[in-house]
Image (cartoon, rainbow, N blue to C red; front, side, top):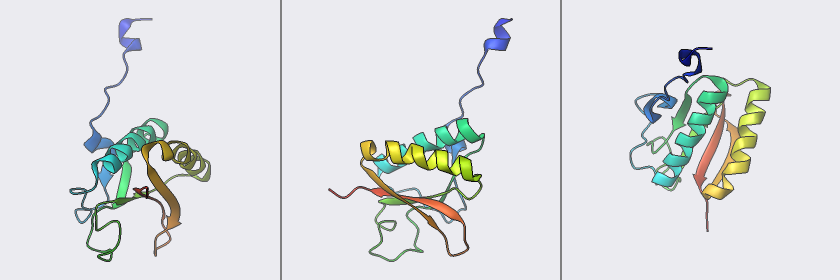
Length: 124
């Protein structure tokens, strides 16, 4: 076995593993604790499924003014590309890790039927 065979691939930067679904998705102004947690989830997603994690919604104007998204306290993560067993694993990782990060989550479907995970800053 040569030294080259032991070399691990380079770890990509956060902007490669956590991607907005479109230019309309605004991540600027989202609470840093939530963004950091999403980046950690994105690295797990990249390691497990060899694909970036897609943010469907951040601090976008599509939500009502009272919504946590508009206040920068919520993110929606696209999980529709995962197979059922992959989604189960990813949701279990979120269920296990979110409370320690003071993040609440729900699993839902967008109006078009796409599956997503809604993350928001936990209420005290």
